[in-house]
Length: 430
Ligand code: SF4
Image (cartoon, rainbow, N blue to C red; front, side, top):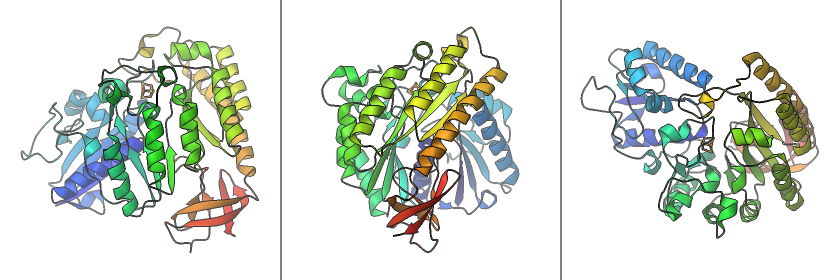
């Protein structure tokens, strides 16, 4: 029996897919080389925003067309969790809509949606990585309630894995050839806080609680296990001085800050912490400690009530912060969220215009930040023939370094950056 898993959405979904693959292998399945040769075809969907949902549906329909006669088609992931009943009704092609933790391989031939999770994906084993880096998911769910975000409603409150589970999985990946681990969670800076307070499901402003931040210890421990450790999605109030120190100690000065906007009133409307001033203060503190630190963030434009002043503040912030990388999204009202009930929607044309304006400002900054690296010496990890990354690029999100294709995949090589090609850079071996 062979399986095929098609994965949509964010890095956290990719980890879930690897764990599902590990489970299927443990049940006697082998990986298929294409969906049309598989007995079990799985679509691991994304429901983040409307375009992601549309892409998920198109993918499911495409897989339904491509599967061979008799193959089972299963839809899982965020769309299955959030819209299970609607999917069951709307997609007769699908054999099973499986919510998180439900078995994909039931004994009955025509099982439909069931609702009780039978296992937690977080603690499943995963197959060895087929590339020299891997995502490592350390928690599921989120205790925050950002105004625009539906994730807590279907992923639930935060459940952090234990330090020993995470370290065991990390060692397995490193033993399998992984040289860079990328830690992911919905709210990574809060990793371990739920375990400390017994899982009460309340968000904690890490800066205010005092005592040690659990993630700081995890970063220190994992930093000794692997050549490179990278952290994604840091809620800004969780960026404590101790965590900054721990990240810098790992030798990967990369800070992916989940900022979403810079205007204080708009951030309050989003039910989020912070403002441009405190964000800049943190960024400057990091740059004082490590001038070569790299920063990434993402921002939402067109949130209900957003004014021209808010947009101006965002643009001014981008100029002042000089982030290396940034992504921009237009607001999309999600069922059941606080923001979906707010008045004063921003017309979609205006939101798109603001997105273009912010992207234009950031593109010029990113180009300048990339050009600064020309002539510098860097150590790169060879991800694939001819494709590498320094510590300044996160896999799958940022640009890459183009190198000699004969360099061995998985090796760390010292190079000199010689030229830029858009957001990618070229390099020659030193
Ligand atoms: S911290 Fe992230 S996952 Fe949690 S509610 Fe906010 S946006 Fe959603």
